[in-house]
Image (cartoon, one colour):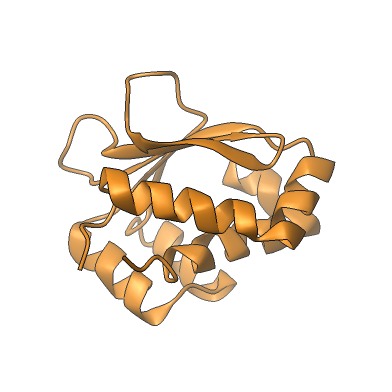
Length: 133
């Protein structure tokens, strides 16, 4: 099994992201741009990143120090559990509310006010469970 958030894992995630045409179309329509960092709470910087430009994942891999729009952190056991069980809105909200999924940067409340973005966000998390190598 490949390491979560490794270079290869992130490249496969970006490939799956871009193949998810309905999600990409909606994110493009919403003019969604973001540099998203993923990682662990005990590390100073994110482990990896995904650069999304107008809905399309244009770059993925190790975090390179650039300014983030989103910084998502959780302990490895939680990431692994979520990747095995999957994500839904209730589990995400509960994880954020219990600080198990730390949003160190990013305005998740803005997304929650836009139903099309909520659907795209849920699909983006669900795609993580599909990464296989």
